[in-house]
Amino acid sequence: MLAAMVAAAGPAAAADAEAGRRIAEQWCASCHMVEGRRSGSDAAPALAGIARDPGRGPGWVRAWLNDPHPPMPDLSLTRAEIDDVVAYLNRLAGR
Image (cartoon, rainbow, N blue to C red; front, side):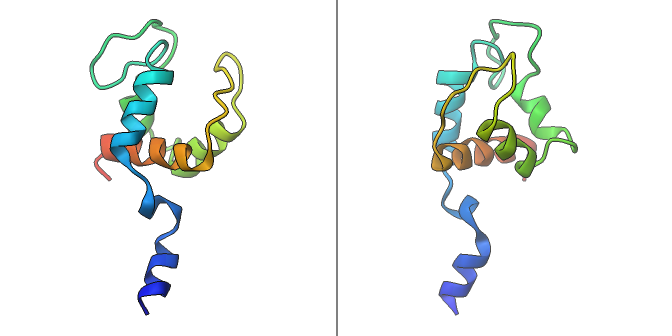
């Protein structure tokens, strides 16, 4: 029974929002605002805005990070790192 519940929870169950925040600070903060810190660009939306955008849910974020599009660079994140970033965005969105 426990195994079924863990399997149903999916990959985000093991994701670490704090690790996702660290990834965002390392790789995203040069363009995106990360938790109130100024970003290097006004052209990129704040991560909190992305997190709260109903059109940019967890599935969209995963797809975007798996196959990034210009002007965003290819970060070559692992699946676990992407799950961590999604967990961080979920935390920002209050999910």
